[in-house]
Length: 351
Image (tube, rainbow, N blue to C red; front, side, top):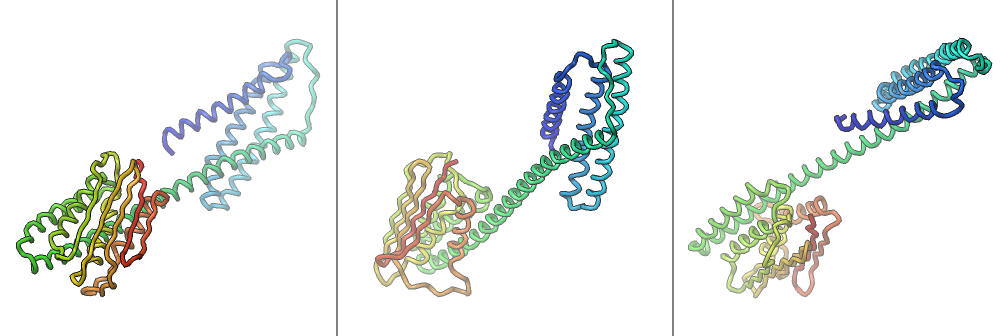
């Protein structure tokens, strides 16, 4: 328990017990009260406070920790102790109060004898009431503590899952890019140095910036632009590429790193062919905090797995990352129509 929470608990309890003390002290007929009467009130309130705190901090935690036998044993001991304390206090201090009244003014009311059964009933009733209040507050505290622990466990689990997904996407992306560079080196070796320079910049981004939970949207869009430039170097003559990016991107807008890349990468991976004219259209629009990604490419027959490598890893992981990081802040539509593959993602990037 933090120091702040302890201080708040002490202040709250002090306010409650002082309030009860003032209530009992100032209420009722105070004409014939003696010093012993006031001491009786103080000792009774002190007994309430001691009994409550013993239950709250010593006994009830045993129950919530699963130590049921110890709990029941301590409940009996503490409860009997409180009842004995309450009855003994009443007998001793009431006797002192009446002796003080007799020694002072002769106008004191006659002493009323209270049978021990009556005192036992009162002490038991008040003890059960205090136990109920302590159990209620301890139950709420245990529930709140469990809820926060579950939230923290879920948060850590989600962070671990997202980190795993990101660690899977990066090698997958690099593998595809290196394969593309290999093909470029065979078909257009003069373009390879520029491609390697672009790849170096992209790898630097992956290694040093993608480790953060969020990056600026502007930096992530720069990465996409570099990737598209890299792909442009190996486009066949029959392919047309259209790219539209926001003219200005506020620095305050952050995004999960490389979240948009798999949609762009998929268009190049599955939408290029040399057998017919083909077009890849990539539009990223920004309106306030709302980002819209639209990707369109020619629909081709599914490619077979190359070198035993499964396809679709990047897209599957991206869907999971969207669910984890933006559960109620995104819509994703993927469909095939008019011989083309269409992707539209809307993402709320509000801080």
